[in-house]
Image (tube, rainbow, N blue to C red; front, side, top):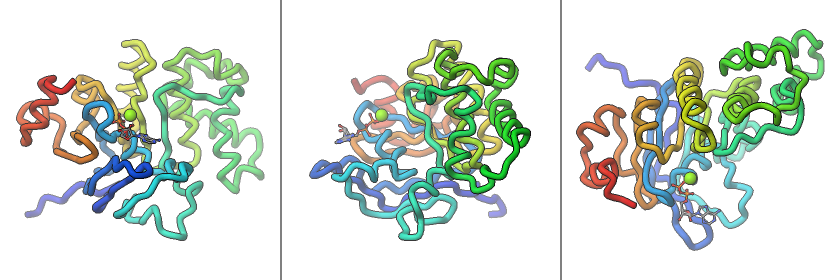
Length: 260
Ligand SMILES: Nc1ncnc2c1ncn2[C@@H]1O[C@H](COP(=O)(O)OP(=O)(O)O)[C@@H](O)[C@H]1O
Ligand SMILES: [Mg+2]
């Protein structure tokens, strides 16, 4: 004893999910540590995106989704009647495969969520807004590259910069968790490396949960790894040990490339 367990950011308890009659997640018990990068890996269709999307209830909008069990973010049951999904998404931000900035200026992309969600926004002066923009762009290592063209259209940025902007625009509402679903899949190797490096910076402040189908990426960019298969969590361990000495034979088969 005497070794403190890492504080928990997200915990699921017997969490299952159905799309209509099709069960996509089975009884998932998962604990995601705070201020770490955790990756979800597993073959296509195993439920990585479904599990990730459960964490901010973005699947609620599909009328045919049903769930059982519980998910807690920082100890709060996210399905509790007093939790509004808008409120939840301020705390649990999400980035998608393809960067999806709004067709607005770089500055407006950063301020958009803040304007919607932060009651202080209305009374903020221009300078305070500028400060919000600068802080967010600095955090994603984009400030120096875009500070002279904040009024330019976000869609004129390269894909790596767009993806960093999509991360940056989550930050002004002070989330605790960042969910990323294959955030590098549209990027070239350089952009991928840049975003992976950014994850190490972000995890100082946020908990990062990332889906990747790229095992080399999981190995490079995450500290903990969760291997999923057919809607179940098979193994969750430190990334180093998962790739060196997997405990489950199914994990070993996967990392040795024996699944399609
Ligand atoms: N919106 C949806 N409606 C119905 N079935 C879905 C939907 N999204 C995903 N599925 C199914 O759920 C399973 C898990 O999908 P997904 O979570 O996207 O897997 P992964 O991200 O690991 O590739 C797959 O069989 C997929 O076809
Ligand atoms: Mg997916």
